[in-house]
Length: 608
Image 1: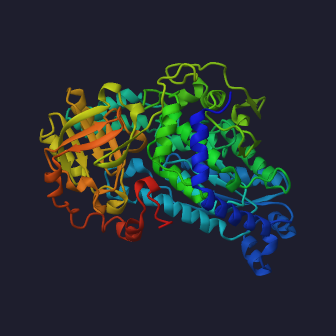
Image 2: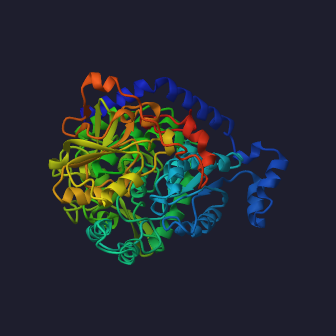
Image 3: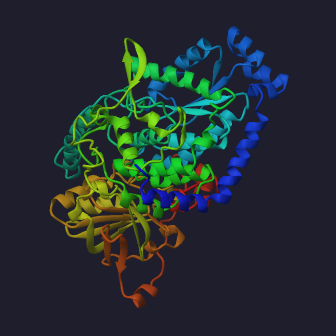
């Protein structure tokens, strides 16, 4: 199947737009690669440097490192034992070191990166550090690799800001071959519809904290990634579609022989692509314009996390590639929605994997001409190498073809029979600015709302009004001063159950905010990531209670319906005094807030 015309057009536009910055990036990493050519990287450091680098290594590893011939792999990990998705990573360095030694090479734990859990910080002050943790992780990855004694790198991470941060950091060392190693999802817990029902009951005061906590503990109950299709699992999908994982490795549960076998094989494969010659595969050469377009298409085809309208922009920028929300919007018009996973359905990622998973999804998108096959991946040349699912054949890792048809058509479908003809995201533009709308999660009848606004400057204000019954009507809830420069652009998940209650009562309800809703964006229509943000003088700072606001995903518009003369006479509302200034470490991130680029530029602080 030839490539879809929209995929060709958008890819060419990105290539032309990025010509200067991409050329500069490639020149930089190729220069770094040339200076590293002709032997192990550690051969170019001083004897003192090298002695420090291997001082604590086991005797046999010291002998190999000292010979300066076999590759030495750097392990960068987001392990901590508070975050369920990353707790399994504790065991991975041992698997990796063993596999490297079996091949006559070595591996060292190069560095750890922070890994905060948005599930723990939702609605708490710590959530205002969440977005900045991505950039800190990128910087931490760079510090880990800066010792210049590694010939390749393994990135161990899963969740929301962690994988984008690891990838941005890895791209700063784009001359190094790099493979991403996931931990996998936890086993399925409480059904997602039941979890959502109890959350809405709690929002209405109909059940207490004990009942809510019991339900949440049944949902999040063990080691592994949360099983709904939020940012964490969208990350894993993206790493496969971009060719940075071993095929089919995203959704294998932790603590299983297959998970261990895949981690071991990732080490062996990295050693293969570290070797000089035609097989040498630097990560900066993999992540090109085609890989970025593939990532966007994968996100759209699966109804993935809206966070990636920030993160993919930042990742692309780190590789010298410039993308914007118009690229997402155009690709969405050509990309069919092939999955239904919570919050876009009731299934979780374990159900998706059982129905055919990533191998079937990639095959369908390739066969429909929606993905570039002529890309480099960690498996070599061509994305079709990732049309495969891993299994253990008499205890040995092997790959086989994915099923011809999905095992459950309510979760995963063929490209010829999609859930809907277009993808999961819309770009909204108009007098209120530019915003993202997750259409795949919202029923068509709720995708246009025109109602009087109720304006809030925080989640807490909105929730107080809800509990007081002040929002029991048709309403567009505007929550402003939530952008990256105001308070770090926190996710506003606390709003979802309350807004869903109002919608279930039959009211026409929508949310408009310069904050985030992320991968758990639900059934309520929401125009998010609005920019210019209110703190920068964006239109949200001029909206008043009672203004009619229209959110229309069908037309792609976001408007405030106010007389022009009246609008021009208004003064800009000011952010609440002291917002996000201090407490919970927020004072340490003042420079990130001041220096952040806008949402459509990835809310990047490191490039400002």
